Each structure stands twice: as C-alpha cells, then as structure tokens.
Amino acid sequence: NAGVTQTPKFRILKIGQSMTLQCAQDMNHNYMYWYRQDPGMGLKLIYYSVGAGITDKGEVPNGYNVSRSTTEDFPLRLELAAPSQTSVYFCASSLLEGEAFFGQGTRLTVV
Amino acid sequence: GQQLNQSPQSMFIQEGEDVSMNCTSSSIFNTWLWYKQEPGEGPVLLIALYKAGELTSNGRLTAQFGITRKDSFLNISASIPSDVGIYFCAGLNYGGSQGNLIFGKGTKLSVKP
Image (tube, rainbow over all chains, first blue to last red; front, side, top):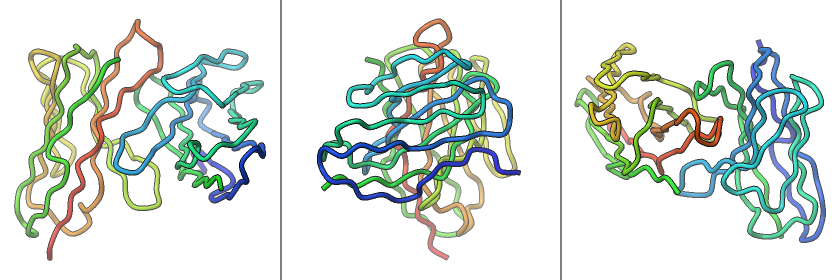
C-alpha cells in the first residue's frame, strides 16, 4: 500500500552539484507532477507528465529536468544546484486531473 | 498568471469551535479541491468539487464550489486537536495547462484543547 514514494527524504547539496530526486507510484496513475513548496507559500508546479514518454513544463521549470520512461517513475533532475533551489519538493500522481496523491516530500538544502 | 487568495492566513481557535476559510480568484475554475498538510507530510486530499454550487461533506468538513466559479469555502465543525495543520485550496482548469493545479498559500489552523 505504498502510494507515492519519494527518495531521499533529506539532502544537502553544495552549489553547482547535481542530483536526482526519485519518485515512484504503484497506483497505475497516468498523471504525475513535481511541485516545490517554499515557507509560507503554496505549491508551485515544476513539471508534469500525462503518461509515459510525455512531459511538460509547469510554472517554475528553470533549473530542472524530468523524464518519464515508465508509468511508475518520474525522476526530477537538478543539474547545477543553486541556493534558490532550497525547498521542499513534492511528487504527486493522479488518475483524474486534480485529485492528486502526494508523496512525503524531499527537503533539499543548497549551501 | 492565475492566483488564488486564501484567507485567513492563520487561525487560533478553541477546541469545539467551528472554522471557516475561503479561497477566491479573479479567474474561473472548473474544479476546486481542498487539501490538508500536517508537519513533515505531503498534502492529503480532503474534498473535491466539480460543479458550481456543489456542496460536499466529508465527516465534519463541508466545502462549497461558489456559484461564480471564482471561489470556494471550507467549514470544519466542532474542531478537535487533530484538525491542526495547513489547509490548502487548489483550483484546476481543463483545457489550460493540462494538469496544472493552482494552489493557495494555505490557512494554518491551530486548535487549543
């Protein structure tokens, strides 16, 4: 009964390093999303996917990349980490548009 | 871009009191959703609304999709300590950026036992 699983839960990166945030869902959902949440703010959409092989930019895509080679997995890549990317990242999936199930989040600090 | 104005930003209430919060927008939405987020967790969907005027309940929670399609309300009756958390509204438009949920900034609820 895993739902949406995100790894790692916490990470500290140095400026300029790269990393991949992993996201996997076992509900056979077509839609998957990456959001970032900054303190006192709502969630902002980074990228989303409507199915394997299809991805599209959200509101704040700069500095990130995604891929969707399978229905289950939707990794988020940071190529050159910057302090502005310090945030909590949430992956989500949905069967229908909007009714998203969220993972527990990855707390990323860039120093 | 589209924005949601959620109010109040925070609430401090006594256990047993009723709670009301709302979300407004200058844009029309086809779907309104309400989520709750507890510390260290991801948001959890509470209620989804699909039709203007729709009133939907989930236990002690009741939400309404405004007639103008530009607002939504969430009420919590007889609050209890486990209601503590941040409540987010979210609006969705089909036919725009597909899959793009717009979130409000949240209402932080504190409940005194």
